[in-house]
Amino acid sequence: MTKVDIVKEIHKRNGLSRAESADMVELVIETIKAALAEGKTVKIAGLGTFLVRKKGERKGRNIKTGEEIPIAPRRVVTFKASQQLKAMVEKV
Image 1 (spheres, rainbow, N blue to C red):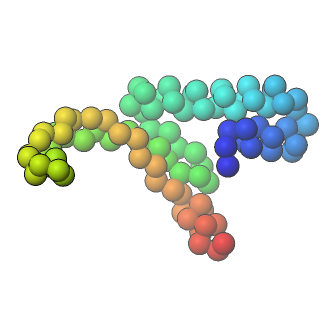
Image 2: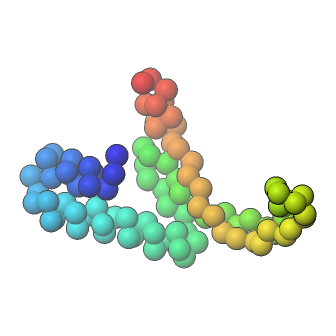
């Protein structure tokens, strides 16, 4: 499913124009992105939680040469599905 599919579904279910539906979807996505960029956790009931994790520096290897190289510390976004979502997926 893509962003366009979500817009179409909102348009179909709520009778909003496609432009209004697209604006709503874009606003929700931008709000989530802004919160994550600030390092905040985003919890959506029934769906799950988006978390920003800090990963420390670690050692890696160049696959071709076998040379050990450092991997810089970074922040990553992870998603943890809610129990409700897990149960829905399990049924299907």
